[in-house]
Each structure stands twice: as structure tokens, then as C-alpha cells.
Amino acid sequence: MQKELPLIIVFVSGLVVMLAKFFNFWNLPALVTTLDKWSIVMSTFAMLMGMIELSRLHVNNIRRRRVNWTYSIVTLLAIYLYLPFVLAQTPDGPTPKWMVANVSQPIGSAIYAILGFYIVSAAYRSFKARNLEAAILMIAAVLIMLGQAPIGETIWSGFPKVSDWILTVPNSAGMRGINIGAYIGIFATSIRVLLGLERSWTGSGS
Amino acid sequence: MSAQTGLYIGALLTIMAWSFLYKENPFFRFTEHLYIGLVTAYGVGYTYHNNLVPIVTKDIVQKGGYSLIIPAVVGLLIYARYVRGWVWLSRIPMAFWIGYGAGYSLAFTPAVFMKQIFDSFIRLNTINNIIYFLVVVTAVMFFIFTVKKESGPMKWGHYAGRYGLMIAFGSAFGSITMAYLSLIIGRLGYILRDALHLIK
Image 1 (tube, rainbow over the protein chains, first blue to last red):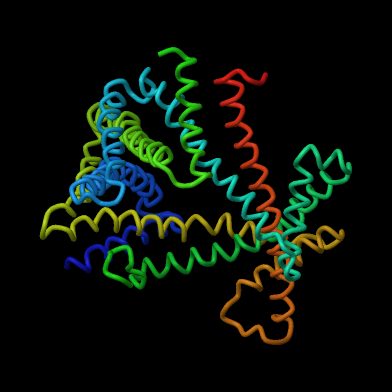
Image 2 (spheres, helix red, strand yellow; image 1 turned 45 degrees about the vertical axis):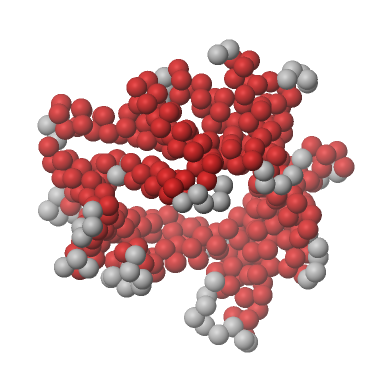
């Protein structure tokens, strides 16, 4: 029962959504709207899960004096000192607004921008035309960058047009091929999940 | 605190985060852990005010949608993983989300998916359309793993598809690099223009 019930729920909830889409009886389409609402309500009531798990992880770091455990104090203090303000003032309140504008958003953008430095560094290291595929990848990337940067148009006025052509023809077509492949993968995985063949989500392996 | 003080703090935190480019150091670790904590707290507060409160006060109490108590209770079952012997109950809400998600993608994705396939069969009256069609078909051929590709059209389609995909990946890489450069320029503008007033 403990193993079968979740699998039955997976199958039934998936089947109901599919039946509601493809058939119009027993007021099934309205049932999907209800299930949609149910899904939101369930996620809402599970909202503390992430915070509890994060807190447990950092409390254990501190308890066991793991490497860099002192930074776990920072995370816990940030959560439990900031949370009362967000709860009391709403996310649009003065303190959360100030914190987002001057602390969270600058750090988030800075950390995200770090990836930019690494992408440029990776480009420098990997853009060597070792074979035809690598050469094509490099040429396409360089043409796109030259087409989008002001310096490209200064060097040759045709770069933006070439860049546009790459984006609208081969890039768009290649991405469509990738999407079609991905959709087929989604279908296959969804069918496996509904049939109970894919059970890794239960934590008991497949 | 004044707006300028906030900008100084934001600029300082940006520099502390970017100090990672030199090497991993305590300043970066501090900002990283601070960020995780703040975002978690904000996320919980945001969900509380924008989802939980409206559901309880409007949908359940005002509108009398008492049936929503069922998913609320099922959602709370996820905390059963902290109760020894009742861990399996936490899989019930997970099962609903996974089943609902899988059913949803099987039911509603074909509309998008099929449209992409139909739109790929364009009139082959221009060079661009021919290239477009060939790249789509060969890219799909590249992703077919159940057929041997050692000879014949599958072999050549596979090769051509790989080159088409390389152009797509290259242009995606180029576009992403440009987007990140814009982000870096934006952050530099925040430090040098907004906070320190060194540039206009």
C-alpha cells in the first residue's frame, strides 16, 4: 500500500488531466481547473519545506563543525532575522523593498554576472578550430557577437545582417530540431512516469 | 538609511561577490550565504502573502471554497517525512504533482509540439526555406538513437545535423555571451555611475 498508493495517484491524476483535454464528458474540463487550483494550494502549503531543509543543513553544519560552518550562521541569521520583516510588512514593505534593492538584487546580479566572465574565459580557451564542428561553432558565435556589438557594425556594416540571418535561419531551424527531440523525450518520460516505470522520484530507485 | 548608503552597500556587496574571480575567499562566501538566506526568507514571505493568505481569506472563508481544505491537508502531508514511520505519506503530494505534470505535458504539449512540426514543412521556394527545412530534418535525424547510422541517408543526415546543431549552439553561445556582457556592463555602471559617481 505504501508503495502502490503514490503510483496509483500518479496514474489517476495524470489520466484525469489527459481525459479532460481529449474528451468532453462528466464535466472533466472543469475538473482540470479544480486540479490546477489544488496543485497551487498544495504547493503553497508545502512552502516551508525548502526553508526547513536549508535550516536543517546549516544547523547540522554548525553542530558538526563542518568545513566553513561559520558561514552557515550567516545564512541562518539572514533567514530568521529577515523573515519577520517580510511577514510583518509584506514583500512590498519598506524593509523588504530596501533589502531587495540594495542587498539581494545586487548580490544576485553580481553572482549571475560572474558567469559572464567564465563564459568569456571558456570561449577564449575552447575557441580553437580543432575540427570542422568546432570551427563552425566558433564562426557562428563570433559572427553573432560581431553582429550584436557596436564594434562589429563599425568594422563592416554587413555583420548585423549576417548575424540576423544566422539567428533566423540556421539557428532557428537547429533550435527547432532540438525542441522536437526534447518534446519526444518529454513524452517518453511522461509515459514512463504515468505507467510507474520511472520511480526515481519516490527515492527508491527506478 | 539613505538611498546613497544603500547604493554603497550594494556596490560593496557586488565587489565582494566578484572577488570570487580572483579566488574563493571569505568575502564571496559571506555574500553567497547571505544571499541564500535572504532569498529563502523573501520567498517564504512572498508565498505567505501572495498565495497562502488569499487562499485562506478569500477562496476558503469568503467564497466558501471549503473543498480547498483537501489539497491544503494533502500539501501538509509533505511534512510527514519528519515523522518516523509516516515518511511514505510525504510521497502523496509529490505523486499528485508528478502525475499532474506528466499528464499535463502529454495533454497540452502536443499543441505546441505539432505546430512546430507543421510549421517546419514550408514551401521550398527560397534558399533560406530550403536551408531551414534541411537543418530541421537533419537535426531531428541526429537525435534518432534507435536506428543505426553507419551508412545511407541516416549517416549523412546525422553528419549534416551535427553541423546544423553546431551553428545553433554557436549562435546561442554568442547571444548568451553578449547578454552576460550587458549584465557585467550594467553592474559596472551600478558601481561606477550610481554608487561612486565616477562616470556619467
